[in-house]
Image (cartoon, rainbow, N blue to C red; front, side, top):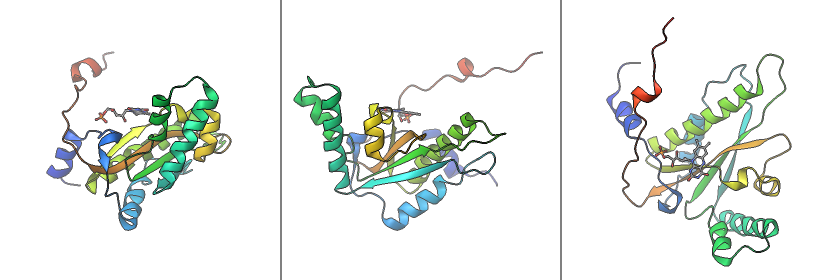
Length: 192
Ligand SMILES: Cc1cc2nc3c(=O)[nH]c(=O)nc-3n(C[C@H](O)[C@H](O)[C@H](O)COP(=O)(O)O)c2cc1C
C-alpha cells in the first residue's frame, strides 16, 4: 500500500461526535452493510470471530430508552424525572446504533483477553468505517453495558459483554478537538 494522504489526514483528525450532535440521516442499508464489512475485517488470533454485532434503529431506540428508564427506576426508586428523561434519550437522536458484543470462546491457546481485544478492534473499525462514509460516531459503554437487566434487555447472552455501543449519524455541529496525549509522555525507546 502506498502513502495515502486522505487516510493519513483522516486518521490525524479523527474525533468523536457526541450523541446529542448525531442526527438524521443515518446510513442506508447498503451503506450499513459496507460499514459492517469494514468493521468485521479485523485482527483475530485463531480466526475465532469471538464477537457479534447488534443493530438498533428506528422506533426501537425509543422503546430501548423507555426500558432503560424502567430499569434505572428499579435500581433506584428515588431517581428524579430529569434523570429518567436522560435514560429515555440514551439512544437518541442518533438514527442508528451498533453494539459490539464480545462473545469469547473457550480455547486452549487463545486467551479470552485477546478475544476481547479483537472485539475492541471491531468497534474501532466500525468507527473508521462509518467515518469513511461521511458519518459521525460516538463510542459509549455507559452503565447499561454492565447492569445485568440492561444487558439482557439490549441483547447480550450469558458470558457475553458489550465492548461498545457505536452511535452513528450525521454531525450537526463542528466541534473543537480535545487535548491529545503528548508522544513524549507515552512513548519510550527500550534500553537494555
Ligand atoms: C471502551 C470505551 C468506552 C467509552 N464509553 C464512553 C461513555 O460511556 N460515554 C462517553 O461519553 N464516552 C465514552 N467513551 C469515550 C468516547 O468514545 C471518546 O473516545 C471520547 O469522547 C474521546 O473523544 P475522541 O474519540 O474524539 O478522541 C468510551 C471510549 C471507550 C474506548
